Amino acid sequence: MKTSRTGKIVLFLTLVLILFQGLGSHADASDDAIEKNTAPLDWSRITVLDLETAQRFAVADNPSIQATEVRIQQARERISQARAAYWPRLDATASASRIWMPDNDYQDNLYTARLFDPEATIDDPQDYYRAGLTATWMLFDGFERRYRNRQALNAKYQTISARDDARRLLLSSVSLSFLSAELARENIGIARADEAFFKDLLEEAKSKRQIGTGSLSDELNFQIQVNAAIADRIQAEGAYRTALQSLAALLGLADASLPAHVELAPLEGASSEEMQVPDIEQMVAYALEHRPEILQSQLAIQNASLEKKMANSNYAPTINLTASVSGEREEDTRFEGDDFGNTIGLNMTFNLFSGGLYRAQAREAMQKEIEARKLLEALKISITSEIRNTVTNVITFQTQLKLQQSIARLSQENRDLVEKEYKAGQASLVRLNESQRALTTTHNRTALALVALRQSWWSLMSETGMITEDEAFNYLNNIKQNDNQ
Image 1 (cartoon, rainbow, N blue to C red):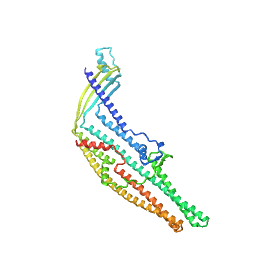
Image 2 (cartoon, helix red, strand yellow):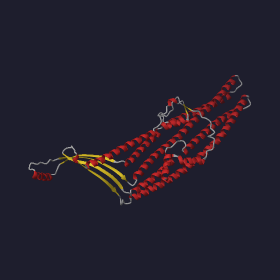
Image 3 (cartoon, rainbow, N blue to C red):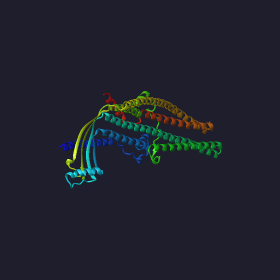
Image 4 (cartoon, rainbow, N blue to C red):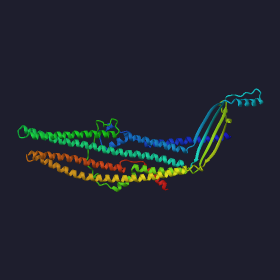
């Protein structure tokens, strides 16, 4: 009866362990379903690449982002490791040994045995076989397991925040690179327009010289201006190819080049939203609540506090429940019920003195918490400064764009008038060259102001954290609510 009762206890603990493992596996599978990435995007269906699509490709295919996803999976497994401390532990043991007795022991045992049976013999060596099953369940450890689980969960969301920060920086880089490519292509168009303008005048000058009404100097001048426009176009085309290669690398394309059939969306004019003045205070408040680094720092403070609680939990007793069934048999492995014994016990351990170890650990954790709080303060100051500077840039480029657009309209009117005057013989060649060069320069500056404004807005979106969504925000809010209850 004794063996049967303990065996039932061990069997019960085994079933509980299997049940918990099944539930844990189901929970992990659910998490995997939640974290599962969307289906990869298909480049064959893309002919015109806009900024939004480029950002989607970057997040889906960039190897750095994929590496952060793997780190999240690692953090999830560390949570499972921490949760394992709540489950009972079941260990099976088995051993086989062959023992040779010392000659003195052999002679003494043989003498004793022959006192009762003159024909008795003793086997030497002797074979011993042992088997056992032990279940151990920690019932109480001063809540250390609870704090360690919270730490593991915090670490997971710190990893998620790190991934969100990597996404934020990647999306920002993609935006800046995409807009730089659009600017380079816009400059190509401006250079081509400049080239076409002087080519028309060159053909006209050749025609005039053939009929004796034009001069060679005019023809040579226009040829020089055509060549200069071609040089500008070649430089812009090189900058465009470089920008496309940088963009392709950010998108995670292995050969760092966009597919041949894909072209960038055209550079559109500034929208009414882009010409509005940002609200600095609102931007700063949002950033201090949603930036991934802020969430990471807040979770680091939480972890330091949990370390202090874990150190203090060592002052509480540790209580374990153990149950075991074990047996030993000589000569063969045909175990029977009478070969087994069983043990059930409740063990408590209470540390009375550790040389100040736990107190030092608590103080170290307290200093870590202070450090984390100071780093958070410094981070908030840095983010606030970045946002204020970027908002200033947005306002500056808004003003520049308005001014350059006005100058571009005036330059276009002036160039058209000078061109008519030159063809009518009322304006000099020098004045025509200057008006065309001023128009080209103004178009370049207008495009640059537009792209700079748009890049500043994307930088602002990145610095506030609006450029990406983070999963840790709601989690951290839940922690705060639970701690306040």
